[in-house]
Image (cartoon, rainbow, N blue to C red; front, side):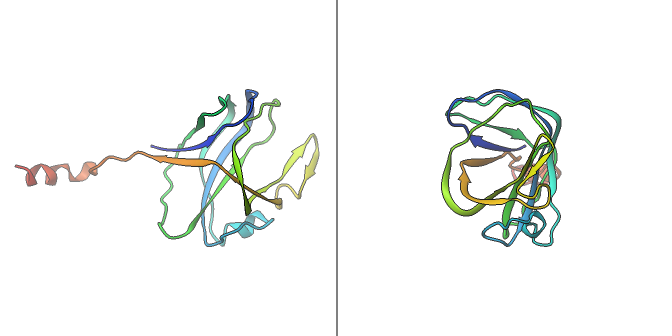
Length: 154
């Protein structure tokens, strides 16, 4: 199991987020640009989570997040680009803690029918770094090696 989480702050307003997706992508960049495709650094992002309707009801001062639907194989070398996309919501919000950090966050959106900051191809680079964590759960021994392990301790 792999789970991505944010640390919630302030008062939250539960809501539904439509066509909600999370994507991961390797990148050699250390700061993001305002163009999403450039941030991919020639690589293709992998969608690891998708819900037609995603209900978010974050509790202040607690972690909240999502268990991935697909496995992402991190190469152990590159930086990791994490994307959150959705298409419309019912005015819910999930504020998270953040700290100032230059060039680590880019966003764009549509309000009604008006795109802001170049959505969907470009965005506004800001100086935020959200408090996030990733939780990995793996078996200590691969199921295919159980026979060999048993033989070692026989």
